Image (cartoon, rainbow, N blue to C red; front, side):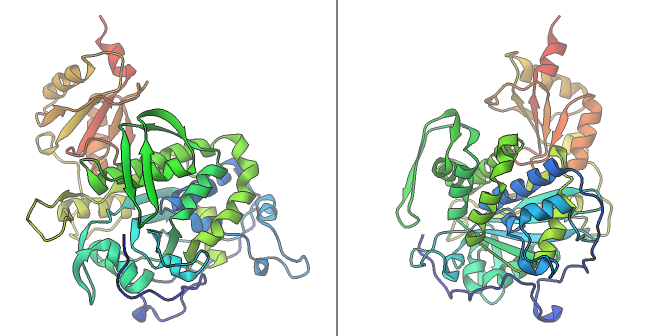
Length: 456
């Protein structure tokens, strides 16, 4: 896609020093040295790899930057990242931190390795929240076609903000859309990062739901994937992440990106990946632009090193597709009520001053997907939900893979309603991502645990 607008100037990878009033990116809290014994090496590596893999999708690869020499004691000389792992993290962050992650489209005229590679539209936009109080990570996907008003530009798609004014304008735009949330730092990642990272990891295991064929010569993107469970290399994984020619367009791509993140996390739990960490670090730095300082990077790594699979919660900005002829362009129209719910439950930001609670059964739209060996399991679940007072329920297409445990997928970010539904069912795992049926508030993906209850 041809890029338009003014190119942003090169951004420093050091903290922005301008006054807060002139810069929407606020400063992080003071970071103090702390020297506890290093624990949880494996989890730390998994977190590092996860954030690096995520950044290739537009999620947090800045945490993979090499350890700068200025962090080492002067009498010892430069220290490697391996030295840091051996001696423990010495920096901490004292409050939740929000990082805007921008995955940038290829700029056809930009030479590799130059600042101009970061001047394109944001193919992926996410807000990452690291909370040291409970070692949790929250991730909000903002569809690139979201209709917004960019300051001094006008009403357009949010992916144009980086082209018009770089990460500063992108951060200001996101803050305005998301109830004034403070964006502490930014990370921009060029598209080429993803391909190389996946290859270094030895590929990722992903289920491709349908035949995917598409070509974009401007972006040098050619997609040709067959359906089925398979191990994708870097080139194929990029195709899977960027395909948008199905009926769901950009929203389907958000779902696939979240599915890829799960696959990458699973890959990173493999002990064979740990020796590749130095190569991952070296490969990522040329693809990343950030205003996180080295100390801040280490603080965020330390804050997130304890996360487990259940501590990563993902959600997509709720909304709808614009109707044909509604606007001159095709947009994702944000749902303000859904936005407010996500900002409270995922980011602790309450714009109304009212406490949020689970919605009533009659107000929830629930989809059911069969992921069990029992053919009528979804229909049986629908009947069971009716007895519990849920009437706005429908059966969606079967899930591709059988599952042992039932999942309650929080499609629209309503965690409290998911918890209430789980309480009423008496079983099921809450899955905080956007891989459920798009028309639902919650998707119940019934597994073998439910099928066993149906057998006489």
